[in-house]
Image (cartoon, rainbow, N blue to C red):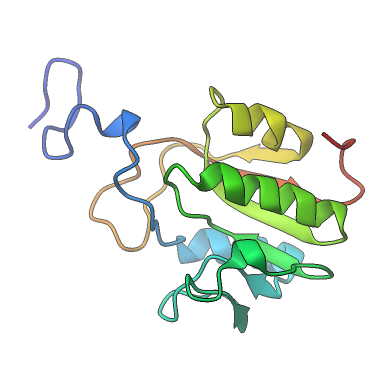
Length: 155
């Protein structure tokens, strides 16, 4: 059932503004298309069940503390408040030689978006993604942000 604003009441009216869910499983169709282009070697934000690459880091290994140097990274970071740490890490690792392709919520109103994402290549995704482990589409727009050494200038 939809409310006066067209929101699905099963999801809740304020879901667009909350970070209650952070483990959005990458849609395989999106990953496969990007992998065909980039040939990923590392997934730094994985679980043993959803890792997209042979080399991956789980919460236990903490990808924020690991080097990504020389890797071609696919990053679908936790979407909670710590996303800014992951985006900063992706940017910094790209300055050290990694290529990092990020699947992130399109949060153009945030400091992390402007400080880091705007310096990468941005590919906005049309519509709302349907993440593999969810019944409904994402309650937010998404984008692919690509950080490469030959990208824009440093922060």
